[in-house]
Amino acid sequence: MTPERWEATNRYTRDLFGPDDDHLAGLAADAADAGLPEIAVSHDVGRLIRILTMMTPAKLAVEVGTLGGYSGTWIARGLAPDGRLITIEAEEKHANFARDHFDAAGFADQVEVRHGPGIEVLSKLADEVGEASVDVGFVDANKDDYPTYFQLMKPLIKPGGLFIADNVLGSGNRWIDDLSHPQIAATDEMTRAVVADPNFDAVVLSVREGVLVARRHT
Ligand SMILES: C[S@@+](CC[C@H](N)C(=O)[O-])C[C@H]1O[C@@H](n2cnc3c(N)ncnc32)[C@H](O)[C@@H]1O
Image (cartoon, rainbow, N blue to C red; front, side, top):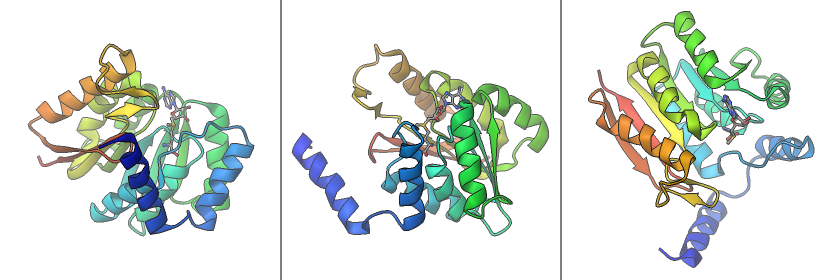
């Protein structure tokens, strides 16, 4: 793989599927206008998490790292008809933007945005939803807390459910070959914990910045 081939590969998949539909494109444009950072998952990661959510199939999904709701929209589109998504966001501005967006897009009954630090909100969620109740857990927030996010989500995931994490190979210009970087070291620590966990079957997909998909089998 050369940088040129990486570019061509990404161009190919983008061309293959065409631009985002009006809803997703409008969301991305509104988020940029509102000053939200342009760090949402790519369209192919969005497609992936929607398909995985559909396959589970998911009645309850939990996301850490809402931003403007781009990945949450892909997850919401994959939920079972009576399914719901709880998405957690630490920045009030991001949480409010996403909440308004989900409500305007008709997801008010299915998607709930919870404002607060992921660790705090996830810890409370455990009491509320109970163990083995979550079909899909998706993590795409601050990397330092990735190991804790897995530890907190692990008991919540149902047997047959999925734990998914973005950025397990890198983030921007920091990559997995530089473990001296604390955020890379944290994602590595989480990935190794998932791989070593006898209750999960895991794979790392080298889509964009790397997506970990792990299925809880017991
Ligand atoms: C990469 S963005 C999420 C992108 C989103 N998943 C998407 O694809 O549309 C990371 C988000 O995590 C949020 N975040 C950062 N630290 C957090 C924390 N401790 N708890 C929850 N969210 C956090 C950031 O404010 C940001 O909105």
